[in-house]
Image (cartoon, rainbow, N blue to C red):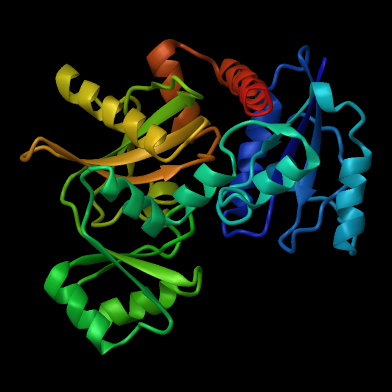
Length: 347
């Protein structure tokens, strides 16, 4: 039987979403195939002792006591591992520490297999400016953008944004997730305010031209030869699909799948696949793309290297409508890909 360690929590602003993903994974992982243990990581990066999951518990019951000494807490985790060959990790930590390459590098150093993306693709896609730079160099259409840090946050930069991007301007932390810290600036005063807010979450803020189109999400799965799902989308009357619109506004409508003309959908899926490969992704990711119908054009927005796996998240649900895969079957495949990736990279 494969021993599976599920890491959850972590220091990022997406700590609670990670717990929701972990609970959903725990409920759906086939107990006849996997010996599951969970490790909670607190907001300071301290590990809990590995523990078994009790079904039907609230996700916040996954919050466990951690050792006050970080090194001792990590030792509790590593001491529990007794069979590297048949062990795999599911690092279900979203955002900083989880999707930026840190936990992946830690697992690589330990020689542990894990599902999903490695250090390079995680780091690339976590930083939206870096993602944009790479995709731009490879010829993908995307919103025009400028980046700013605490030293360059000044009147000259605001004027440059107004001249090159034009209001309204989307402002976001360069490296963060779940649309936290994302705002829509209509003038210079709002631009200054929202840049300062974004810089609370990251050392850089990204200012982007607003694309007037429908954002669609496409699940991608695979290593060397990835496949894509049908698109999904949120539709909302809000000007911006931010955290509140996604998770709290009951007027936001989910469309799984999002219906498009066959040829248009085919193009969208091909763009998602190429963006995934261009950023060296492995295992799985979700690619978010704007579709501007009156231009019949696509603009790549971002790539999530460990997308949400909560009951309401799109990633697994899109595979259900695309290939009739259950969430349990999606997890099986991601674990298979994790083992395959390790074998190829260590051949």
